[in-house]
Amino acid sequence: MRELAVRVRTADVVDAMGRSHRHPCHLIDLRSPTPGRLLFGPAITISYLPSCQKALPTDRYNFSSLFQEAVRDGGRGRVLVLASNGYPDASLGGGGKLAQLDVHGLAGVLTDGRLRDFSQLSEYGFAAYCRGEAVRWGGDIITPFEANRTALVSGVVVRPGDYVFADSSGAAVIPAPEVREILEEANRVVIEEGRVDEQIRPEGGSGQGPKE
Image (cartoon, rainbow, N blue to C red; front, side, top):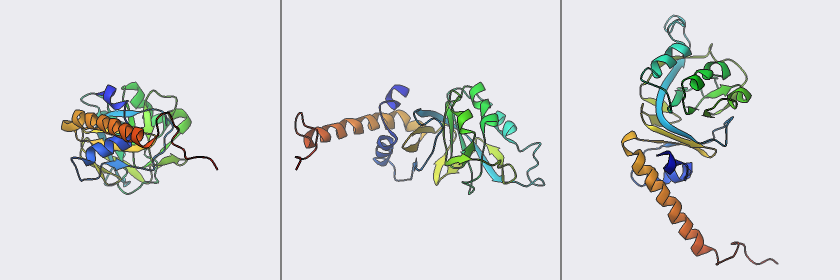
């Protein structure tokens, strides 16, 4: 499936999804410390809530514990999706915490919140896409509270096992049972658009009008 994925862009995947689904599946306005890397793989999820030591004690509700729960059945090639649940400007992780993704062989991370330490994240072997870079620790604002449950990320539903596709233009979420079908359709979108482009441009021309 990755061979199909590397031939398309997020827009192609969204177009393909739109031919069989009406629900929103895409995220835009993302930033990345690894903008040239394709992020593709089945999702595991961690959702965050406002920090509360009484309701969510940090000896249980912390990134390391929830991450270990998320990768309990294996992490290699998977995409960690972090749901900020209404706190898009808070930091959900940084170079130290997210080093665990590299150790477990994850494909990368997608979040609708912010991440810290872009320069450090760019040195890891995974891809990362988020709302932007944070400069402040976010643990006093939000804390992880559950893993591998259905999450809502920028209005997009992500179920564990759904496939995440992200590149420099945005991200899309594909239902797991349909991932091959959607990627094949996205490849057809590319072919169709290429044919339209050939019809519009004169043979051997640049597509530009005459110069004055």
